[in-house]
Image 1 (cartoon, rainbow, N blue to C red):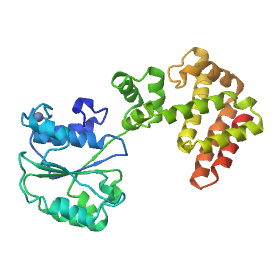
Image 2 (image 1 turned 90 degrees about the horizontal axis):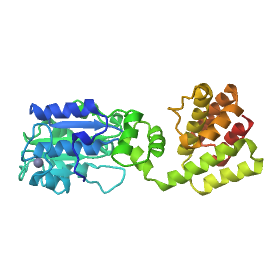
Image 3 (image 1 turned 180 degrees about the vertical axis):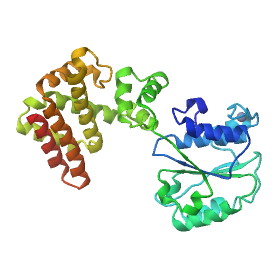
Image 4 (image 1 turned 180 degrees about the horizontal axis):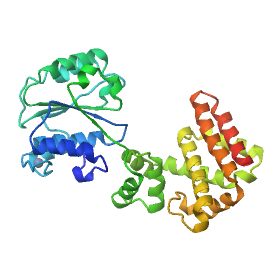
Length: 335
Ligand SMILES: [Zn+2]
């Protein structure tokens, strides 16, 4: 675990303010549930909170990251910060909860003031596991803090939720993600804009995309296709879709890239004449965006955007991938 602190959390102010004021006024609950999608930063937040709770130099509402306790926590070998493990990838079983929480919680903390249990992917607890946890949540020892991290609270029993402080992560503004990628991850401007726009408010996903070569490869391929689609022969279009399947491009990502391209074309058509291109994502391909903006009518662009949506619903309905993509590319060619 890296040496992180509250200032490293991008966005999520409401959530972190809540935890920080609990630390500041020493009003710690026995159970928290942090909800958010994959890579939205739940674990990072939980770990900063856990470190602050155990820190030997308690600096009000944040960890010092220097003391022995903080160092142990950063190496994930703090004796009083425990991560609940599960051997089956999709289930946290009743035995996991019994052995790792219920059977352990009565043992007082070794060195810290608290004993903290972190349950990642808590939505994977089955009903029996949740019922077992409920027993502990009903009468937790004074020093116990349970941090549940979940992608969906719908999977959790109401009785569990009612005993937790439920905190939700929120999508982070695109500009904040872009700035984060540029400043802290040293991603160049153009690339940062694409990844930020693509990540739909999820900072972790944006970072992942920024370092993902497969994504880069797919992006160049999509842009290449978009640039030449109007002049492409039918057999070339068929070859494109075949390549997409062979190279195992992620279909949702592919459609998102197509969508961003045509949104750029539309933006350029609407504002480009006034020289306002701030919001265009594919800035490096401005000449081709401008070209497409001249070639397509507003109606044509609208039809294409509709066609991208249609492809998305077809894939959800399990229509053949190659066929779906071919139909969409033909719509783009027709304009
Ligand atoms: Zn410390």
